[in-house]
Image (cartoon, rainbow over all chains, first blue to last red; front, side, top):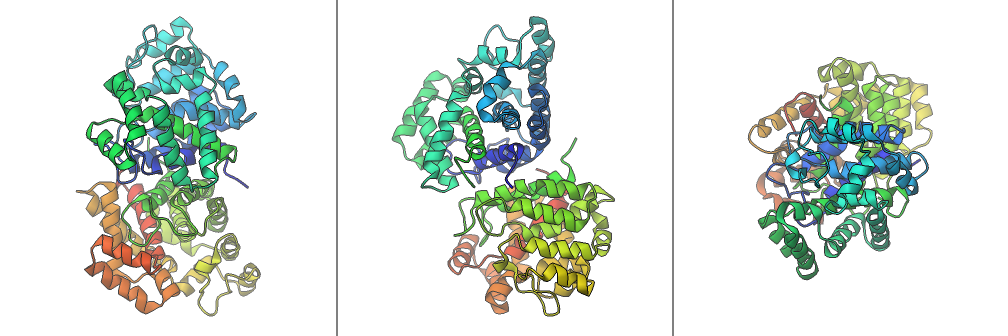
Length: 272
Length: 272
């Protein structure tokens, strides 16, 4: 007996946010002004039914919408929108042919999936996520679900068009390349370290290698690149203090880490 | 739309263990030698299906067995056995007439429920829980489920007979008196404090008022009483250091706190 794919996804959300230190992110005893650690826990719990739908083969858009809806039943800001955009297709693949078949799931998404993705936006704190590439519907507009239908865009099309400016979309466009690589990193650290240490070290490794797209959107690309350098130079406590005082949250890196935790749990590379 | 009773129970488990500081307990960055914080998270996730069964009206023994089974799918020691023994009847009541009707759920338990309770013991790290009152079957014996049938004991009978020596059993025997009182305390603190602070302050308040039965079983009653005094005298950091260095875990207090978090979430006294 083992945890199901939807349960492993929920656990990945909890392990990712519950690991400390993770400089700049919400975590235990490290809250944002508008969002607490316990609200991230409530978000992971509430996403459960949507993740079960994905495991049982529901269309990606429907499962994603339901998961996001459940993840917003708390008083805080955006918690798991990006993470769920990665987890839902992974869980759907895991419930069917296995996580390695996720690319088939992505490429078979439809206009309906894209429309529901835009509808899900309306449920969240869109301020964090409103910087969409030119040529795509404006996600903060209530009219976006209709526009996406008019233009005949699938969810895969939307993600592919956003890949250059969004780390989550980039995973869709590359068959979850960085997610799978990061799951290998987690597996490597897990051979000698406990779960918390393995996840925390993997996060630092990711920060050093790749500028965070969420930071780039909010603060500019040069700031995202500065974070990459700082992650290589500063100790973890100084890095955290610096990011917190500047209001910098490497949130996209956390999303990809969350997806990688799921893959590592689901494939046995990491065991809790 | 709101979280369902089974989801609120899962959230209560996560909020209880994720709150810090809670002197002597497992928490973020505070692990036991045999059990990590992330294993408590996995336990809360795995208990989900059993809690859903309880919400949908399954017999208490069946739902409890399934919840315990799911809560042991990790490599650590006992995590939520005591908490689930409180949460399962509460969730069953919440899914039917509301938490105030929990006493009816307790009193209508049967010999089957008692037998499954003893079977669930076999799934856990029984070293922590093997000190049962005279007159009851020895929980560490594989023969206990048969013995309980032979003697015709309901789960309520078993709990009532253990009430003097076990804080969890005492809740069964008293209609969850301390659980409901503690939910009021949580509600009071929540009026001015955030979730983490409200739960942490409530835990200290509980420690000061009532010697922990888990500590009494492991270390003797005088030690449990010493903890009560220390909780009134020491600051929280010193108290934690002292409990950790002496290997003292007020685990029964945490179980009742977890149940109180559920009641406070379910009744709106505490909002996340």
